[in-house]
Amino acid sequence: MSITTLEPLFNPNGIAVVGGSDHPGTVGRTVIDNLVAGGFGKPIHAVNLRQIRHPDANWVAEVEQLPRNIALAVICTPPGTIPDLVGRLGRQGVKILLALTGGVTAENGLKAKTLAALRETGARMFGPNSVGLHLPHAHLNASFGRGQAAPGDLALIAQSGAIATGLLDWASHFDVGFSGLVSCGDAIDVDMADLIDLFAEDHNTRAILLHLEGI
Image (cartoon, rainbow, N blue to C red):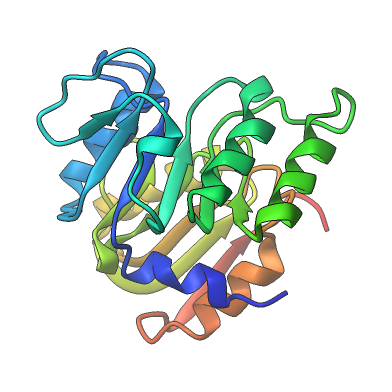
């Protein structure tokens, strides 16, 4: 599948955090804080029905209040909300979605509904059940993991979020930098092959490190 729709990740014009929060310790707050700590200097929008007071995020109550055609939306809401949000975000012009939520499965029907919404809108999705993604050269840390990766020329693509965060902790002690770290999660859409293609074309990447649990 074409990776053209994923290329805006390397220079995103803005990010929406759906389920963004101002409560310390929540996933939505951690994602916003990581984006800010990573140096992301473009607009961050927190979507939540409850008003969010965060000094570095613009609050909107509904997806439809977001600016049109922002590059990336990070979804931190419960699994049952995912198919509807994918459709609404896609219709708002968001082309890249990152679902941190788990529980989107074939057994509960949410996987099929999510894939149908992706096909309808043409959006691409990382995850669900992902720790997130981190592109240091783009100052993009859209994850709920601990720490900030240093810029480098190694891309890490991991099926396990625990492995990705563990290697980030290890790398910080040995001055190893990254061009990207991606936790694939359940990879119902964007998969390992897409990510290999993406980083193979990235001028900041010299080598790609893969962690595979299964093929």
